[in-house]
Length: 350
Ligand code: TXA
Ligand code: MG
Image (cartoon, rainbow, N blue to C red):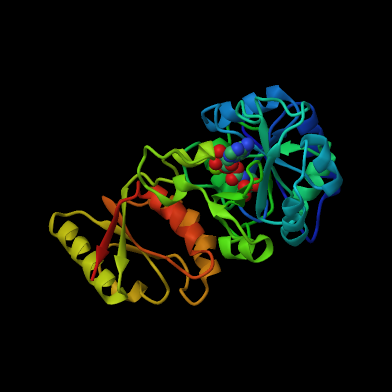
């Protein structure tokens, strides 16, 4: 089986095709679709068999729970037993949008969907194709990122085809996604809300609305004995095939050190990959140099991160070196993904 590709845009929704995709989901099939963060691999969230199929298609460990996507706020109370006041405030501010919240689940959500947990992660995406598909499917769509487990998340339909083309029924191609990093996850099952995964909605933005918010310890410490609370965060992830190292420090020093690595490789007949920015790309004379975006526009860096990591899998490079991107607003989200892709290999230079 090769997935059928259906193209459309948010401005010109093809409702007939969306209804057909909705029927595929209701009947237990799998449909990949765009969201504003990354492409999702959708299945009926209330059908345990669909969730089992999702895990199989991704090659994902079954203890790693799926996010349930809704497209109408009224539906939330059907799948969660309580909605704390703070969650309501955050939902009002950032839903629909790139935010996922975790609550205790009701019995209609099968444990196959939640990786065996009593809690469920819920997101209300802002993408119009996603919203209409979720409604057409009956209101509850389980959707992890539509990549093979361990690979960078997909930001365009081609990435989904590359990873899952033979394992799913349909891909709705809505073009390149807007944000390019997965949603921020906030856990409301504890007294003080906890950020389990940083994303486009930053810790500061959440603090501004809620006051006291914690960052999951497992995210801050690289010591592998401290387990992150979101099961998915403990796996090595996003990794390109070639070994990736991040070089951090003052810009001139970073450029100098990366150029030394590139020269050393060239002397041995090898070629390195370099993740640079629009501001620095011309400073690297050797290797395969890719600009990830501009430091003047941090969203452009988030937008291209997964795409650039995937592109290097199609290049002959012996190793990859990346600049660091501790940008003011979404730097935490970008560096969380980049550090995981690098297996936490980071060199500080001065
Ligand atoms: O932006 C996104 O969130 C995308 C799009 C498709 O919506 N989805 C996505 O799903 O990134 P996924 O499955 O790739 O990542 C979900 C993360 C995993 O790290 C998982 O462990 C965590 O959410 N998670 C889900 N349910 C949880 C729960 N009940 N408790 C703790 N962590 C949970
Ligand atoms: Mg994922």
